[in-house]
Image (cartoon, rainbow, N blue to C red; front, top):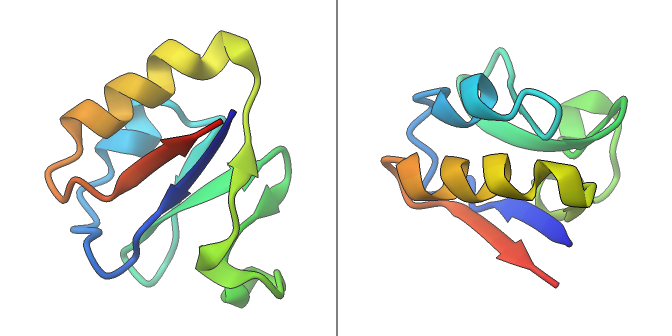
Amino acid sequence: MKVWIDQDLCTGDGLCEEIAPDVFVLLDDGLAYVREGEKIFAASEGNTEGAKGMAEFPDDQMDLVVESAEECPGECIYIEP
């Protein structure tokens, strides 16, 4: 499964990082980004895809990623097969 965040909708609340820190990270710009291991999908982190990239996450993180999406006040987390 893959996940991405619509930066235009992100409120920077940080709930996603609290719930699933292996999949989400809040950066200095106050927005949340997806991560795949050490790779953070943000242009500021040297990733050419920037925030438009989709991070793959392991099946054992599914419940946490779904919870993050459900709890997100900006409703900006999208999960795709």
